[in-house]
Image (cartoon, rainbow over all chains, first blue to last red; front, side):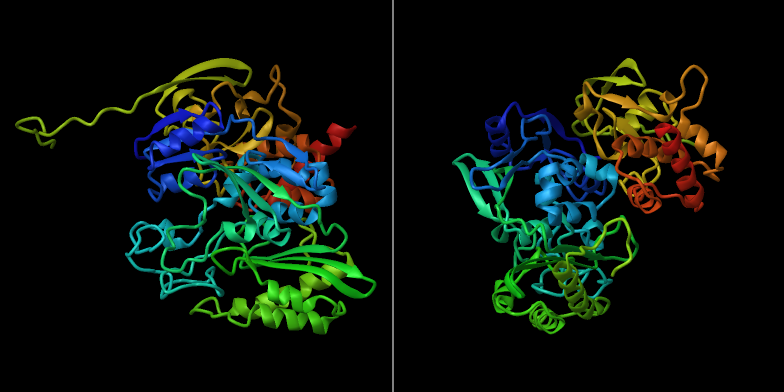
Amino acid sequence: MIDFQYTRAADIADAVRQIAGDPAAKFIAGGTNLIDLMKENVERPSRLIDISRLPLREIEETPAGGLRIGALVPNSDLAHHPLVAERYPLLASAILAGASAQLRNMASTGGNLLQRTRCYYFYDTATPCNKRAPGSGCAARYGLNRMHAILGSSDACIATHPSDMCVALAALEAKVHVAGPGGERVIAFADFHRLPGDTPERDTNLRVDEIITAVELPARSFAAHYSYLKIRDRLSYAFALVAVAAALEFDRDAIKEVRLALGGVAHKPWRDVSVEAAMRGAPASRASFARAAEAMLRDARGFAHNAFKIELARRAIVRALTQAAAGTPQSQSVKKIR
Amino acid sequence: MARKFRKRPSGPTIPAPAKIPVSLTVNGAAREIVVAPWVTLLDALREHLGLTGTKKGCDHGQCGACTVLLDGRRINSCMTFAVMQDGAKVTTVEGLARDGTLHPVQQAFIDHDAFQCGACTSGQICSAIGLIAEGRAKTVEEIRELMSGNICRCGAYPNIVAAIRQAMERERS
């Protein structure tokens, strides 16, 4: 492995000071993605600033009735926290659909947001990749692209964001709290991750000298009607081909509020507020779910090996909304899809 | 035949990486090592502490062969640097038996013939101990799902699940 310096951050201000003074440095928390990428020579930080001992491991109720989740809360602790399991089961379900028990024990909340794509060509330094080496080209476009984007891709990049947790956070309209040299700011989840455009090397709108301190959940939690449905090549421990986070609230039989977010299909968790707006007031019927699915995929575009994901996504949306409406969410241990 | 250089290579010498002292409690014993920052916990255990029971399978967090218990929780030891774990308590497969008696999970793996080649077994056993301590797996489906981070290329899964069920039931009784 490349040589690098190892330092620890004493507190958040020290972490920001250290990263601002060394643009080639990286923070390390759980390390489950960064260390892998360093072994592959994809990430080559000059220095690792260890933030894993900072006091960011609390889950607290907010005055607004939501939750504030410290950036270093491990994924497993977050999924099994009583307030999350009871009030935000969509988030718990999405987390438990991802990775393995061992990785969830290590991976942090903030780090999950900063996961990099699992595109094979991003990982393979022998091939071109605009995300890894801007301007070198995209090997995935005409290569093996089974796992790649069907929505929001660009000529420069067709990679997908790998996180399950982030799909639920997008549906729940979480907020990301960050700290930088200029102080703190809050980023709406929809604005946190980016589409690739001409700058696929930038996954997020987090600045290089900023640190994620917390993720905040609003009070609205959709605990009664939700489902996280993840479709993948094996039943566990694999990234999504298509994942759907569906959440509903009803006013008698009519849809009062709905959230729909897709994973595995784009460079960021994919939401379309116009589709959600069109669903409000409609009945929870197969017909209205199918209309929503059509609308979500209206601009979809497949490549040589992933065009099947367009129809797969439509069907998964209908199924997840049906599960959510019935109050029978997808189990993450009994894998039969009902 | 080895070729001899007539003179030493020119150019600046590349400095050796700074090494960092790390204190670990491994299987109950205090251990001190001095390692470069890139040394994973897995390599520290195997190469610096001579504990080769923990296996290096994929070295990328995809197979689970390197699973150890870190402060009581199961993790992939290939996916963390030793310097990050200064002060931590690590339990490896070597630390499970007590006074010559195998840990109940080890015994259950023997009782059920829960392995063939054995390459994944120390990781499977440490992962199963973590699973049982977490207390969340109640059914066969839940055992299978929560053990999915441990791959067995021999395909001994049915016997692994049976062994874990036996150990869980003994724990409860």
